[in-house]
Image (cartoon, rainbow, N blue to C red):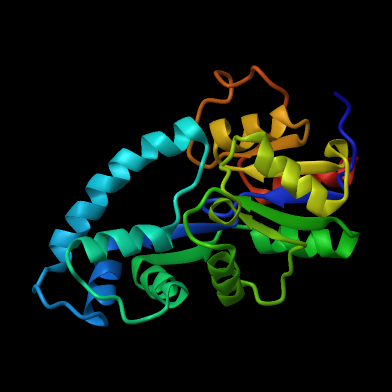
Length: 238
């Protein structure tokens, strides 16, 4: 397939635009419990143990059905299960947990790529498999790159479907108002990002910084990069 300069590049979020440098679910759970009514004296560790167990169950269902589970619904279940009364709105609790549980930093060179795209008129969008809302993604991005804008942010939890489902890519194309051949999709996961994009005839870009074997994953056509400067060089040559 001939590669032409994209009118838009859509991106995955986690480990593609921002990478996680700390994850502490127990800290997030503890903070939610601290601001809630806890008449039974349940501990953060007890709640987190239930959360971990349920997550193990849900991961399989999510990948099998390609449907997303809401963090807000999940939180409601695990706290009410133990008789804990949540005293803040669900979206506020989601943000509180996010702030305590995760620390993020931009992937190396991503800001240079975004500024290059802005300068050359290439549009940007996000499609992310995530149980947190698109508002949370936007909130985190604003901490790190407040001057960077996106045409849209599609969080799987807001639209039911998870990558590699074609439904979520088709929605993004509708929002962009572009044909599949005018759009590239960049992400770090071969099964979700590369295969999902290719199935909808977007041109996949595999951003691979973890050493996954390129040669064993060559059943479809894709661009393979290990840093964002390589993508700028590729676009410049088109």
